[in-house]
Image: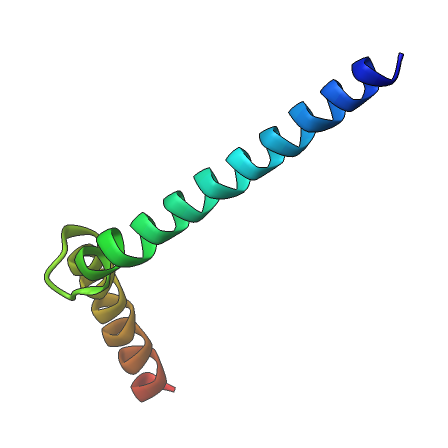
Length: 67
């Protein structure tokens, strides 16, 4: 009976270790690989966001000037 409990405990530990390693790999690739491309102002996502914010800034300036 002890072997069955020990075996499931060992599988549980191995599963947790593998899950932690996979999470570390995903976090590392995200931090080192994707961060540079998404943090640059030249990326497509950032260009659209900057354009949108510039439009809203202009609208806010017009509204505050008319007030």
